Length: 271
Image (tube, rainbow, N blue to C red; front, side, top):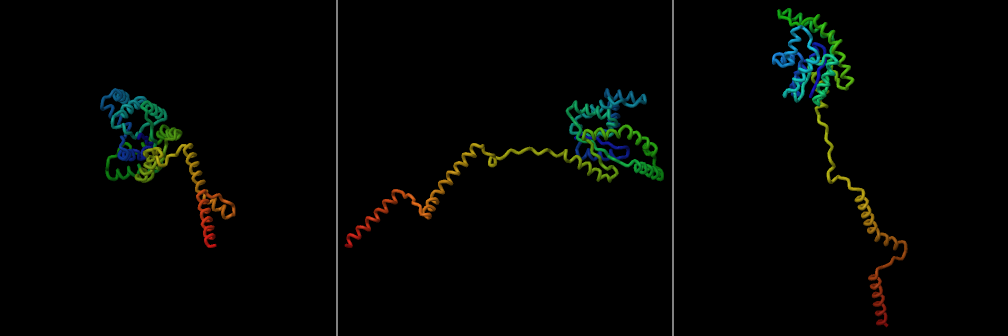
């Protein structure tokens, strides 16, 4: 199963991705993790990406796609994967489609976690206030202003992906503001039909197999003849009731003649 999770920062994509990994036994492909792994492994694509990042430049789409191509060719990704953080733009989505098509693969679904940006900002503000009160160190992304910038970038770059995948009939939207378990259940409901195997057509059993038309016609003709034979005695009985003369067999006529002859002999003796 090959999936994409879409949603703005703070929508819970990471949490749902980990649950999909456990339930579907697939791998979680995060763009950032793949870039760091490729750089650490010193692969040709990783070294190219490192040189670009060292110059402070954004890694171009073709490099990211090449890293993903290397990753999905690994044995643990053969069963499937869930992509988080890629694609970010429509051109990246089209590049991914070409990559999968070259390998005879396709996406099984794109899950969009829809959220309320205003509520997300309030959550960040509340979390920052609580962490500050406890004296905990804040992370770089625990900042309402930083989140506003990331949300604005998402609306411009990544939000159009929803329209792209909707036009392909692959997009499924989920309420990302619902409780975590409810979001997981909604995703499972979308994926369960794809996971079921299509029922195979059963061949008719021999007992129920249809007979050829010629055999059916012959059988019906035999049944008609049999019914005609059974009706003959009944027809004779009916003729006797109506007064019609019914021909008797030769044996019956001989017996009647013998009875008449005996009766005549008795009369003669009596005289």
